[in-house]
Image (tube, rainbow over all chains, first blue to last red; front, side, top):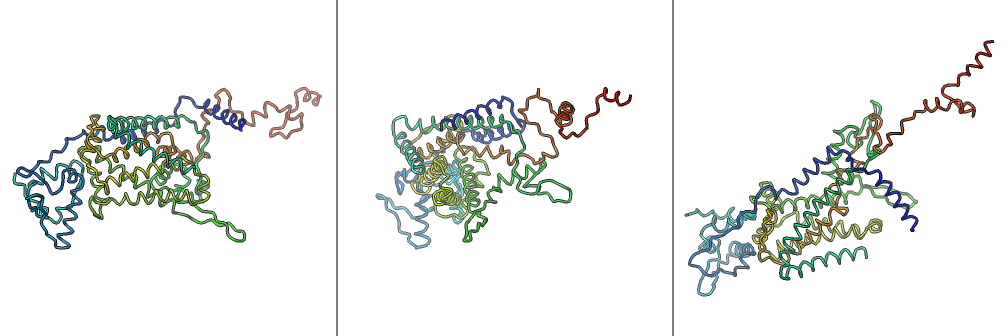
Length: 145
Length: 343
C-alpha cells in the first residue's frame, strides 16, 4: 500500500515537472474566462441596489383585515381565497374588523383604502418583478392623482 | 455511511445557519460576510482551476472517435462525432454542452440466459440530467431578479414562461417541480442501481443533498412559509452593490443562503467543476487530424533532434552489416577492397 502511494507520488511529481508556467491555448481559455467572470459578476456591474419601495399608506384607516406581517408575505393567498369564495361560491360575506366593515373585494375592499395601484401595489411588485394577473379580469383603476 | 455522512453534513449546515442567524451579529455574518467571501472564493478558485488545466500540456491528440474518421474520399466521414476541422469541433462541443450528446449514447449491458450479453439504449440518465441542468440554469437566471435593479427583460420573460400555467399564488414555477423530481431521480439512481451504487462516493452524494437542500429551502420560502421578498431583495441587491442592508428576515432565508454559499465554496474544489471542465476536455475539443497535421509534444526536449531510420542506418550501417541485419541501403564495399578487385 505504501509502495503504491510512493509510486503515485513519483508519477505526480513527474507530471508537475512537465507543467511549466506556459499556458496552452491561452488565446481561447483567457477570453473564455473573461466572458465567464463577466457573466458571473453581471449584477455587480449592471446596475445599482435600486431604491427601497415605499408604498403609500392609506390615510384615515388604521387597521387592515390582517396584521402587517401577514399582509407583507401572504396577501396574495388571502386574495386568492377571496376570489375563490366570491367568484366560485358566491360568498360575499363582509369582513368585520373591530367596528369596521370591509367588502370581500379587491376593488371595493382593498382599494377602498389603498386607492392607488401605482403608488401601492406597483411599488413592491416592480421592485421584485412580480406580475400578478389581477388586471387580466379586473379593469385597472384610473389613477386619479 | 457514504450516503449518511453527506446527508448529516447538509443537515448540520442548515442547523448552523438557523442557530448562527439567531445570534447577535449572526445575521450580518450569514447574510453579508459569508456570501461575499464565498463568491470571492468561487471566482478565484474557478479561475485558478481553469488556469491550472490550461497549463497542463496535452502531449497527444486524444479525441474520442464516435464515428467514422476522415479517411479516403469515398468513405463518408462522420463530421461531428469524429471532427477533423475546427468547425466540426465547435459543432461537436455545442451538441455536447447544450444537448449532452455523449450521455445520449449511454447504453446498458444486460446478461440474459444463454449466457448472452445484450446492450440496450438507456436514455433516462440523459433525460433527467438534461432536465436537472436546464432547470438549475433557469432557476439561477430567475434569481437575477434579486440582484439587479432594474430587472432585465429576459429575466422577466423567463419568469413569465416558467409560471405560464398560473397555478396558485404565488404562481408555481414548473422548473421548481421538475428540478426536485430530477434531483430525486439522480439520487435514487445512485442508491438503486447496484453498479452505480458501488462506485458512488460521498463526493457524489454531498452535492446532490446540498442542491436538494437549496431547492427545498427555496420552495418552502416561496410557496409554504412565505417570506418577505422586499426585505430580502434589499439585502441581496445590496450585496451586488456592496451596500447591503440587513433587515428582519426569516431564518429559513439564512439557511438557503448558507447552503448556496457552501455550494459556491465547494464548487471549484469538486466534481462540480465540470462546468468549466467540459470546455477543456481534450477527448472532445481536439480535432481528429493527427494524420494531416504534425503535432509536437510540448514537453519534448529541444536538444534531442529527430532521428529518422534512414539516418540511423547511415550511422550504424557497418555494425548492422557486421551483425547480418537487413539493410534498406546495402553497405558499399570499402574503397580498399575495390582497388584490390580492380587489380
